[in-house]
Length: 142
Image 1 (spheres, rainbow, N blue to C red):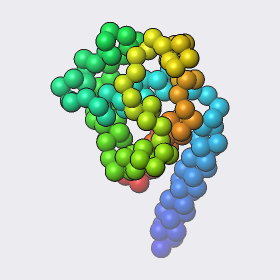
Image 2: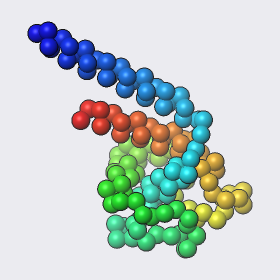
Image 3: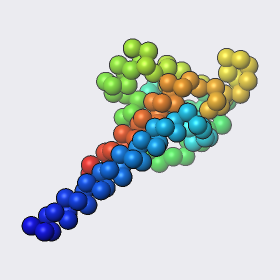
Image 4: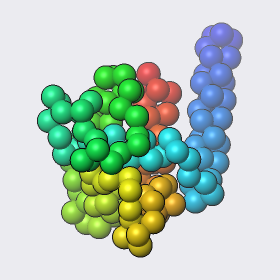
């Protein structure tokens, strides 16, 4: 059973590395927001509000700059993240900002400036980062 001890130790090491990296990711949540954040927020909104037939054609009245060239598997993944009981509960209880899932034009925000990652709420950022960590956990478990 020496091999089993080594195997168990390997699994434990990988699990601890996963926990460490996930903790670091969570600590870095408030530190930056990239353009990818905007694209993912837009895809969450598209898949939350529009029927499948319109996913690749939404441009919020011609004002979106976000690319809709992501593959369908990514779109279905975003749909799973935006249309489930947990997300609905987070929205209903105020833990997730409704604006995170709104179809927004890129032209102006509430202050008249461009809608960017910096004009979204911290709750939206935490939600998206939590989905990344959750996705990592699913991949790790698989």
